[in-house]
Image (cartoon, rainbow, N blue to C red; front, top):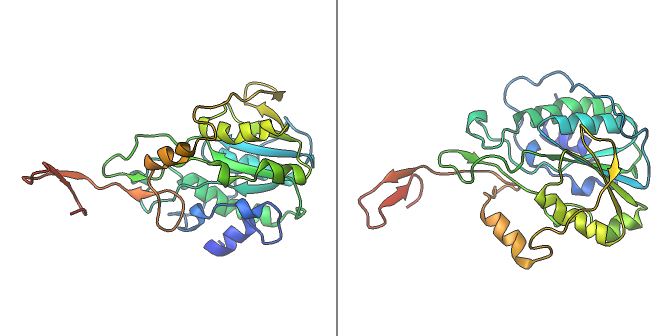
Length: 255
């Protein structure tokens, strides 16, 4: 198995146009336990080949996003991991279980490394649709919930300058955080399409989300998440304990 940095560089090679948006969060800690065999590559039947005016966002649960990303890589797309929740040392403590995603990225690196993908190949941005699942800041848990912000993806102007005219979202639904990004693209005339497991590829109109382009949006969202000092999202939430102090409650590790 490759080490952390080598594995990350396979997914984000220096010369690849879109690699500057790759997130290193799941490459900080190697997956615990034995790395499984290479991911099972699914058959892609909703697009026939890499189209150079098309960008894809795969927003699927768990390792399915990595598997579809690799399948699209075999067609000529460049898969870019946007996973931004840290992999905790203990799988049981994580609010969002990212262990299988991390394992798929490490085992899938060998598959990706064997492919010849152009540096300017159209991108596939991979997201975990379960990134905001679970209870917020649950005591005793490792809170690695995360979301994607407009700053995490290329701007509409950059996309247009690269010849991208259509974005396909591979997901069962358009999640709120992603809609803030897609609406910006839509405003610039970029076509948005969706491919779900149950419906064929179709053009859609993304509805304007609440607090669209509001300065408060990012602040309010991040206040409910737990930043990691090394980057990304992930932090152990201390457990409360009873106290006779005037506050009535203290936390392990605080005060």
